[in-house]
Length: 181
Image (cartoon, rainbow, N blue to C red):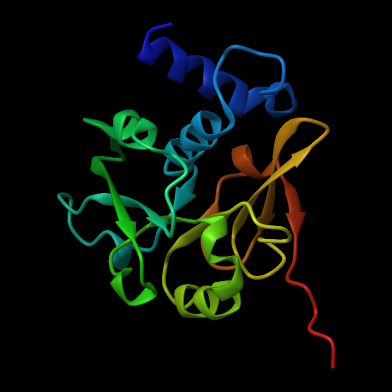
């Protein structure tokens, strides 16, 4: 299937039939291809404050923090693409201090042990944090990928950025976990 047709199919499923996004038993794609497609499309459903994208030529950066489970698929997906006039770029980070002008940041499971120190530093900025570790959104991340009944679902924490109702309708809205005293 050509890449453009595959993107259109994924977007159609994403917008209207999220429960139908099942990667088990289908040849459409693998788990990280689907997650890369979601990362690409999140840029269309989130509104950043003007200071986060100050100029028309400021690229919209999708970052990967820690080990990269996507390989080259995310880079290929965003190559020559724009969202709201901003060119999409992919960067990889190993240290939270490197995360400067990132707009969407996938935090790899390799960073699970450091998550409670990483997220507070990023949540002060306009960064859409995305992860797949257990209770990611409840732990102050913004979007958590959750696999239930062999389907990819989203858990969204409404802290921080403005997220389109089109995305929210397809998601489980969660809040932060209360810390035990």
